[in-house]
Image 1: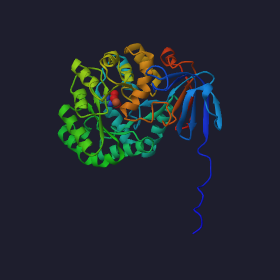
Image 2: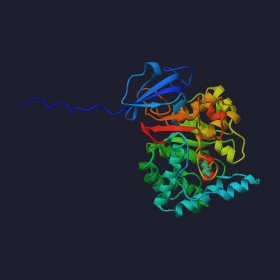
Image 3: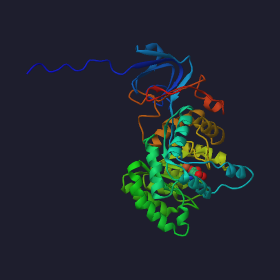
Image 4: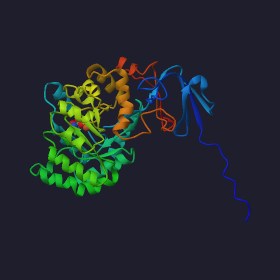
Length: 401
Ligand code: NIG
Ligand code: FE
């Protein structure tokens, strides 16, 4: 036998030094000051799809390529942990009516269900891609995507199949509302959602969700749906306490859900349950903005010790925005959050809500998801509402904007 072959020679993946970052938000307190782990005058080295080095620019190692951040601010790409992006049509007329005084109800979902069922796979895919690109250009590098506008076995499964071809964070929401065909037989619809529909959807989903609300699913139905999903390996998350007080938050905590989303109407017991659990309170200010409703009280949750995430809830009915920066600005102005807390919630908080440790943070080994702002500080996200502040975006090390 001859000598063993030499290992293939070659350089590792290309490395990129991003230097002269004025303010770097790492979300790693071991790397910088405060909960945001802020490093002034910083540099980041990216190797392939991962962060290889983070620290003061003066101490940065050499790399194959160099990008001058010109003293602007950088933070992790936003983690939007709650969105409904597989749909067709829009609901302009409903929004117009609401802004003329009509109330928002869960029933409007059925309008989008009809349009979505009528759309081809290619149309749904193209819509989804459009919204994902729209989000990416605003700095969002991780997006969760729910089904819920099909409400038949075939339509829910195709929504998840389409979503799963673009993101691993897919959520089975067959229990968005009772399908129109089951208007007189909600129990029959719950049987479908926990049976044949779950069988068809589970292979394409990571999470199971239910809209636990008057006009949608009550506590017992929600429990049955989440438990059935969990038995198939899907992890629960819950649309909870959005339009009224109810059992959603307590159920989410009891079942060990990754997040309870909306959290607009909370009792002291609900707040205490969230604070004493690993369930993230995901707040969705776009929904209250677009339905002219009262905002959730983020201050109350944070002061109690709950983990808070901010997300867009992007959907054609209650919150047709893909802008995490908008959510940050509203959360700061209307929900009692500091700019630092809101930025943390939109990045590290979203990662927690998706149980991800590789995103929402700029630390060696993490995925290189980076947002460079056309601003000297991340505080500008709240200070300059409505202004496009994206200077550059990298996702998994690739420059996207
Ligand atoms: O999160 N709350 C339930 N689902 C969406 C609304 C969907 C719709 O109105 O189409 C939400 O707000
Ligand atoms: Fe939602």
